[in-house]
Length: 259
Ligand SMILES: [Zn+2]
Image (tube, rainbow, N blue to C red; front, side, top):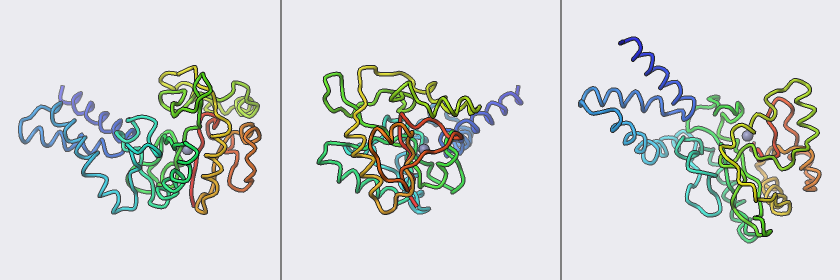
């Protein structure tokens, strides 16, 4: 019985660490506190978790060079509350500045930047799975722009997670990569967590958004599917690129990384 309990705790720590980086440590603290003060774990954990998420981790991470992105800002915000709650919205100060400056410049075009997975708060080399490269604070995924069924610009996105709602089902690159055996290339279609169907891809605003991000001096690469790069008429050959078959499809979001 004791062994099963211990095993359960180890699995909990592992899962929390993979999903949130610091959640595993919060579980260990929960065990210690609930043991010492004879309090129930289900009361201690949510309290500790929120305290760490909102009050404790942001200033410590800042000391180590990573900052949390805004959560309630109209022009730079997460796709949903899971990203900040799971500690997945940390970036270097440079990347935060690029995003804030771009958001400011895009305001006049009524475009707001909606971010998805960024990085965890600590330690270069600790990947934010499943994105192996999101491990140094310099990478972030960003949603495209869409219109509603009346053609009006909206900040809604077609999938709940922000991933997996592809602009077109016809994607020659995806076909090529899947045929070559890169089975993971379109697996994000399984992680939409629900789709809103009546949104349309907004070519002109998405193109403005990408141009703005690529104009930043610090921007190193922006990944997007080749067919979208062509149809959006994106000309920056050095920065706006194809990510290769080893990644996943980028016709549901872009990946931005800075120097
Ligand atoms: Zn990415």
